[in-house]
Each structure stands twice: as C-alpha cells, then as structure tokens.
Length: 87
Image (cartoon, rainbow, N blue to C red; front, side):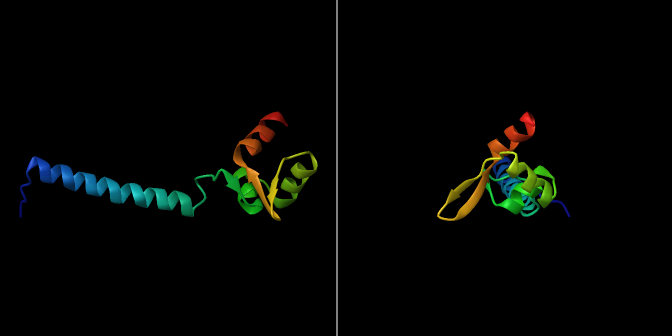
C-alpha cells in the first residue's frame, strides 16, 4: 500500500510528528531529572549536584546559599554551580 501526500500534507504531518516527539522528549527529561529547575528543593539540589545528603549538608555549613520564603527553602541553580566552581 502506498500513500501519496501533497507537499502541504507532508509538511503538516512532519510538523505534527515533531511536536509529539518533542513533547515526549521534554516530558522524559523533566520526569527523570535531566532538566534542572532554576530554584530547587533540597532533594533536587542534592540530585543535581550528584552528592549525598550528608555532603550537601557540609556544603551548607561551608556557606552554600539558600533562599527561604515563608519557611520554604530553595536553592538557586546558578549559586549551586558557582559554589562548585569556587570550592
């Protein structure tokens, strides 16, 4: 069986396929922690830095910055990167 598409139909089909595949890849990256958030919870920051919780606690004692808003603590990705580069 052979299907013949016009250029417009082929373009629309490719656009649709790219959209579905792109979303699937983005979802996979998000769900598997492959995309770092700008602000992270502690367990996300530990995972991002690829260290143990105890090591991360040591980083905090060494001055790793955190940000607390109404009791919610977050770690800024840029500051995590800078901390690693400077220590």
